[in-house]
Length: 219
Image (cartoon, rainbow, N blue to C red; front, side, top):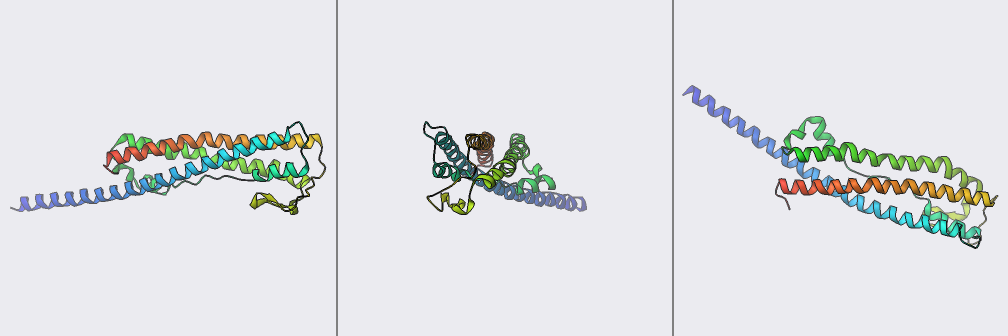
């Protein structure tokens, strides 16, 4: 009888532990799914932002390389909308917590675990480097050009517009125009590469969402 009581107690404890782990698993999966959905929504928005930036870059180059030399106002009107820095906002808190606490073991599907590791430890870190690169390029090269050639008091940078119609560029030469074209094209190239990195990250996030829904029978 004593052995039976001990054995029953052992089974009950195992059941409680199993139930607790299942609850934790559901909690983490729910949070992961929420994080991934937020990331996917962000990627769609940021890619759209960057694609609009591509069009602005093309429009600027067209203004600068047209058959008729653009006025100072035309140059500045095309340039001001380019003064944007695009960051990457993703949520890694749930995955980081699961990894540090050993809770990734709650996910029994190795394919999902592998996909999560690729997404959070390879794809996301790759995207995070480009905004820093773009900001560093702007501060090192574009900002000094603006300081040297523009009257910033005549510009409303945050509004994508100019304070006055009568704009004047300082020390403008064919060489300084070409320098500005080079700066914008190079800055735009960095933004283009960010799109190239964001798209596979978004695709992987969407794949993981579908894998989780299928594995856990979620809608």
